[in-house]
Image 1 (cartoon, rainbow, N blue to C red):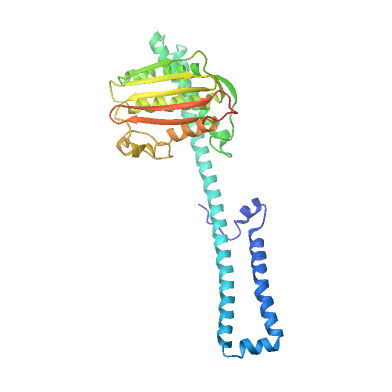
Image 2 (cartoon, rainbow, N blue to C red; image 1 turned 60 degrees about the horizontal axis):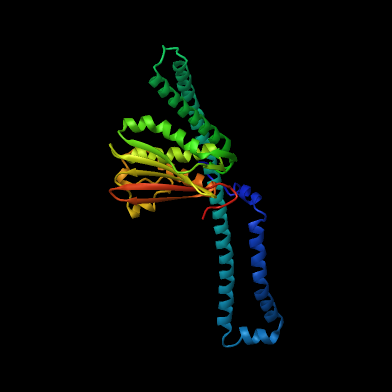
Length: 328
């Protein structure tokens, strides 16, 4: 990363509504007015000069004044240097964030080329270029194509939001049929669940699960939670995906059998890049649940996790039907 010089932090100052160095100088000038006036008064009054400086305590008074002046100057230099370091640090963070964005843009751009190749090949298979597909093979190709399309949308969102934040830069507000959204995600994972010898079930306890929100981001919530459940459920286990609603909220839960999560590990669940020690051998970045929480928070909802070690784990998401309302 570029080394910050004394002039580079002027960019940070330009973004503030005031000049911190000018304010620092003004504060110290005001602080110095009273002792300077006192000193001036002592100098201009012969009797006081004689009393304070030529008396028995004159040396002590002189030393005290010198120490005070040195202390005053030292405090000014110390605070000024501290201010410079803080401004340099702020500028370094800005440059680091910029470099991260540039790396992210390069990675997402490079991801599009192999994805395009995969999509083209899948489209050719679907169209029968390599021979007529059976109904089961056709279904597999459709699932793969849907996953590729989701990745393309994800990449586009990253590119669009790169300069103003990963999730909060832009949010589509549309009326979402949450039941159809969840069912689609469950269908996409059904093949993977069967391969892992897992019983993936979807149960609906409502006739209306419509809500306002960003469909793509909400799909990512369902995708991450179901994917995690499949990843951490032992073979022959069960995953229950539940959907219910009331007049104001929609509740979506993913419950899986398995080793569960201890109370100590619960505190780490939604932190970025943090993975549970006993699951460290399972592939993952430690970002999935933190992204889920960010999206749920963006929709004014909340997510909770409960677990019985050795039995099951449940992730429950509660979202308001109206984005103007915050779920408590």
